Image 1 (cartoon, rainbow, N blue to C red):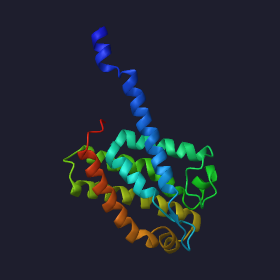
Image 2 (cartoon, rainbow, N blue to C red):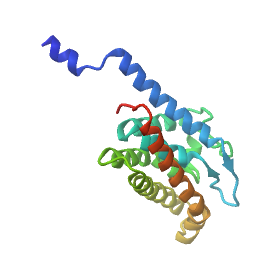
Image 3 (cartoon, helix red, strand yellow):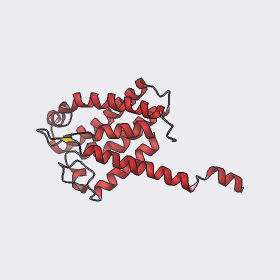
Image 4 (cartoon, rainbow, N blue to C red):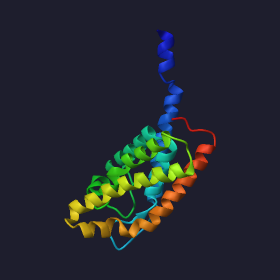
Amino acid sequence: MALTQTLSTPRPVEWVKQVAIVVGASLFVALCARVTVPLPTPVPLTLQNFGVLLVGLVLGSRRGFAALALYLAEGASGLPVFNPLGIGGVAQLLGPTGGFLLAYPFVAGLAGWIMEHGRRTFARAVFAATAAEVVLFAGGVGWLLVLTHSVSQAFRIGLYWFMFAEVIKVMAAAAMAIRIRREPRVHA
């Protein structure tokens, strides 16, 4: 019985390591949020999406989801982790960028899940990141639709300005994730 418990229970050192990885990933996304380009819309262009994709692709579905759920909790509690152009806190989650922010755990989770279920190739990483971006923009544009009551305005504010940059973010996140995963393995 003791041997079975020992084999199935994670060692405290491993548990601490996994928590540190999740916390570090949430802080990485917070740093990416600092790289912000204001646009003539209430939604700025940031590197947050890149960070979310990279975290999901590298850490996998569970740790990616956990890292971004922690990120949202940090931001909701008032820590300055969201883009600096926003108002911060829970109010930022309810503002124009709220749909994007609230989708982040699902975006990272989906990207990670796709990477976990197949060969870890660049093409698979691009597919995973692209599928995750669909979830991201569905959440973001959907929330903007609720706020604006206009499909055309929601797409103008939340999609059109970002398409070119998102292609670059997807490609960069996929390339970096494959490179990182070829280095000494990060255990899921």
